[in-house]
Amino acid sequence: EAHTDFIFAIVAEELGLFGAAVVIGLFVALTYFGVRVALETADPFGRLVATGITTWFGVQAFVNIGAVVAVLPITGVPLPFVSFGGSSLVVTMIAAGILANIASHTD
Image 1: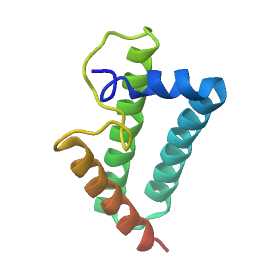
Image 2 (image 1 turned 180 degrees about the horizontal axis):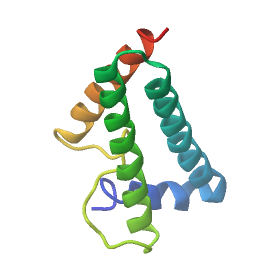
Image 3 (image 1 turned 90 degrees about the horizontal axis):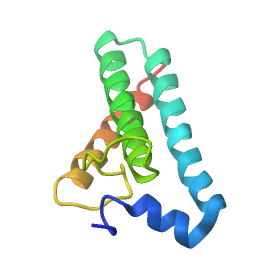
């Protein structure tokens, strides 16, 4: 459905290249933040969790945007924080909270 998994196409259509670039830039910034948190935390478990969550967000965004622009096959992966759905948005928000908690405990 266009309003769920293909929301990036709607954003790009309504807001143009600038809107699409902003969405991509926000995901790049989120990935950079997650990598920085993973590198700065002293706890080995926190480092692994931060790396996993960051990789999850980055790969999920890459696959969704790649599928929308017809570079990758369509897999039904939702765009984190943008596509809405039953459990996807809830689990994404929980993971973001865990990442923020790890960031608050860095030295």
